[in-house]
Image 1: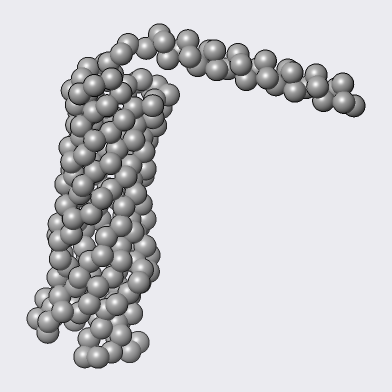
Image 2 (image 1 turned 135 degrees about the horizontal axis):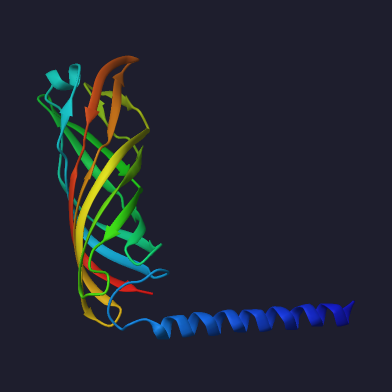
Length: 214
């Protein structure tokens, strides 16, 4: 049994070594500039979130609004082909809600977003891209209130997302990034079991940052 285990371990080591050799050779074949199938792109951005608010029911009567926010954002892109990538965007913000009655308090917003992208000019240093996908929004740590009474909200929302951006390579495997997204998200609100309507947040998100290619 020990001999068999040693044989299996040796075979696994050889296979792993061969896989690394193939991977290294593949990487060596790639030009120094550009992005290609199998690459990972990791970006860290500062984003400005500007809600495009609309509402229904009593929330509309009360002129409910949501403040802007500036927060960090992290995203990961895997290049499926030389031009097509899949990106997961992660970030969270604390947004304050106001109305004609005054401040209603704050709520945490966590909207992980998955986008399918097309990257233009993949072999160049200036690489625009467009993307479309879906976001799942989690509303958490709800601190909304009206007239001293807590306001309940829907905790979950699904909606589409659109994106346009550009990467500019400034050094080997390092680039700067600018990005604009439109994300659709909403939540229903109620007070003492009675519906107050729906709040549509639908922010435009503008970000700038830096990234690395792996």
